[in-house]
Length: 382
Ligand SMILES: [Zn+2]
Ligand SMILES: [Zn+2]
Image 1 (cartoon, rainbow, N blue to C red):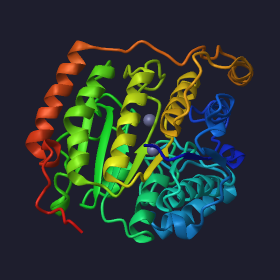
Image 2 (image 1 turned 180 degrees about the vertical axis):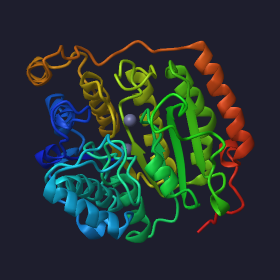
Image 3 (image 1 turned 90 degrees about the vertical axis):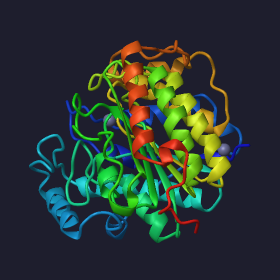
Image 4 (image 1 turned 135 degrees about the vertical axis):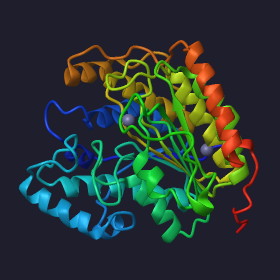
């Protein structure tokens, strides 16, 4: 059972550019989409690559404060200064650049909600953006805007936000901390060892939302086995019990082994298996409504394996064993380093982080009925 996958990407995504030397660079999105093309994703199963539209101020206001959008409009004109504590510099047109990403994600949401198939907005996934401030390279929070749009424009009563980026998706997590309609499952490297220093297991949601926020902090060195354990033992039962009507997944590729900003050691298999499983769950409980977003990823070779691999898995088009040669040339011309050669990697395992993940599973089962696969009393059927 599989609907087609529609990928929303246009070169306007490249306008989101903090300048040379900044680690966040959208050329990896361009190259990922070109690799999907080179591997035949858009030649089978009804999958398409679709152009994007710019989002509007009203779209941004679904999640963000008006005063913050005014601040961004001024910063956009001067292009000077920083938008947060220092990681996220302003640049000329930065508000418009962020609105292109928001527009892409909202178009993707429209497609998912229309029942036309699954959708992927690889240029988005800006999960650190807060209602009233930028953070961690994220000017706006397209995922949070899409969740608010699903609620306000499409009447969604329960949604899942799954975040497998190596950093905690704090903008979404705390943005909806008291909202029981959103189940938030966030895999990340332990906040004691990585930006943004948040996302601890005891934080399970406020008020009536208690139990709907599930943090899965993993120790540095955590590998495929730790990811699978937490996925199987906590995430899957929680999703089945919660029965979301929509699933949004932030697919940051920076938990992959060899990311220069983080220390987890997932292989490609961690991504493809988790995404294949959430895809199955989307058909099982969510009417097939599955929206994928991009996110972090600071080793371009890893990003360019992870995003095509998950797109081909959901779009149901097999990947070739070897990465096509013409694409490898364009990667090497862009980055001046060797391009990946194959789409297969050996699975990874690590004992101590696996034991820590098992303790995290126990803690979550104690703290949240959903983590035990039970529906919380506060959750309405409607
Ligand atoms: Zn499907
Ligand atoms: Zn990240």
